[in-house]
Image 1 (tube, rainbow, N blue to C red):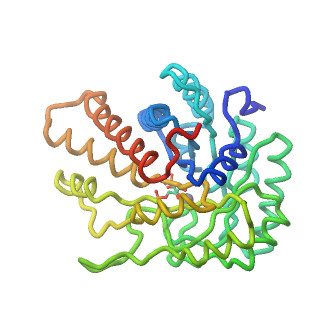
Image 2 (image 1 turned 90 degrees about the vertical axis):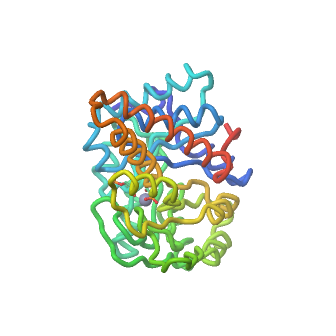
Length: 323
Ligand code: G3H
Ligand code: 13P
Ligand code: ZN
């Protein structure tokens, strides 16, 4: 058993308290490899932002559990070396079983999500409570989910979303003692969030549901998944240099700005990072067909990622200078 405290990590409790009181959202950025992690840490140090490093079940399988533990420890030291010790949490994104959550806690995660949203309400409560009871023994914080997002939630694929029912949230939080709650208000995972015709605006998020949830759970941390904006400039680069992403659409950033000022304390962004990375690698390889040194095409991707995350922290989430 490695405690997250030995790795220099923190859980999400203090971050969320500050986020609620000061009206911003902590970034929940997903990573799978070294370059993504370097970019996230550099951007968050340079903007003096707290950060939640997110690892999905698939990312953990890809990177290896032991490697990840040392990468997280390395990230804490890297931040200090860059000149600023920022609060860093290591979070399991969309954990689907008690065993996976327990394993992550034993490997030094400071926060876990148990996503029981595909189960009936009572089963979701039972599973979430079991994870919370275990996690809290080690001071690890837990995120639950109510309502279903369309798209892929790790291995769970749902074609249709169903919004969170505000009448359920109080009972869920009271019975599980969970530390934060992901809700469904119209976002979805991936790069194809809305079907819109050319020139048509994407439908607004259901802020009415968010407001009802806030009324039922005053001061309680809410989480927004599926919050990439699918930045058109990167989709364009991908398509210009041989990619084929058609009708990719995300959540407009002004809606995320509004959410960040509310009880939404964490905003999850994965796809935007993937798009930036892919765009820059494609561009470099297209323009330099003889190149085969990975450092040559990964560096521009990493540099662009840093720029994108910094802008998100400053202009969208409001998490800059909130350490
Ligand atoms: O919510 C899903 C995240 O974007 C993680 O995706 O399971 O492909 O790593 P993944
Ligand atoms: P995006 O696919 O919109 O980046 O959502 C990521 C997410 O919710 C991770 O849990
Ligand atoms: Zn998610």
